[in-house]
Image 1: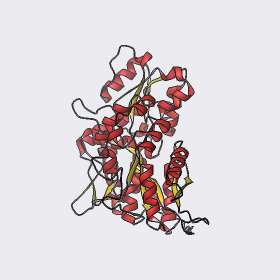
Image 2: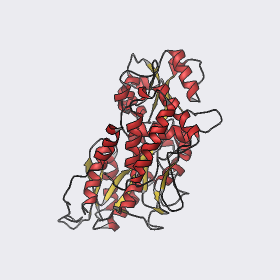
Image 3: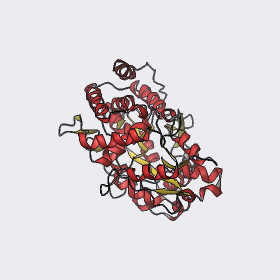
Image 4: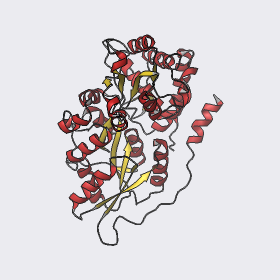
Length: 422
């Protein structure tokens, strides 16, 4: 436990960083909207489209963040804590919204300010919930994501598509297949655990009437989720080196010509990847809903994607909001979906023909996003995430789910007592 407590403590240390400042207007007078976001494949075309549409009213410029989400968050937190006024617009992982809002690093959107994603009628339920904090909308949902069960049709044959985790394990055994699932000590492990506990009927964290986060994790449902994670870490379904595998490792292993795996849990980016690498192989890819924990109990799949936030210290909020309204417009949503394999947040594009052509599994994703399980919306999220990663890694070490449950609940309660952020 000393090692685990030390990991949490180390994560609370923040190195100083001077603010970059300098304002948002370039020498020619055109307002510049500095957009801090990870380097996504769809970034350039949507920025070009919005800059062209703006006609000189503003210019969006991408400020690239590290590819790793943890690295992205660390750099943003350091800059925002230093009141860096060069941050006009932020591409936030959906789980950062509550933390950034509580810290005062982003400002809420006023009613009517957002033209495309400002109401529940416009936005799918899961992405909408991820953008709210303390009764206000702090994020503008940009795109979304959810994890599916992927399988190779030729290998499944006439077997039924697994609908529950028990069926998935039985099918893997029958096929002699591993189940490609991430096991690295990273946010992806939290994504898996959250989806399982939500699907089992509980939550990691709840928020009381005073806005205080409390550990939930009802024992019975949590033990069911931990039992699934234990089985995922055991041979023969666990891929070799699972404790170090991320989503892209799973994608490559599943995509390999001589793949030992016919089954995979992953995000939809795997489909555009295989279409580009091997269009013939892509014809063998099929997707199904995220498996249920129990028959008759709806699965609540993971929720990913970006929310757009307005930096608290921006010198041109009006230009930043105008950029948000362009970036969330249906035209840009289509580009993000067709280029990056990430479904739109807009209800009106739930069965869009142009998106369906490149993402034939769109209806499954849209349905899941209405019931998706957002990770805890709390300003203490980073501590919660670190606690889960620490206790549950590697999956192969979950020998006794009851002992793991007791240890995790204790560490989470102590994590929520801390008010510090990385």
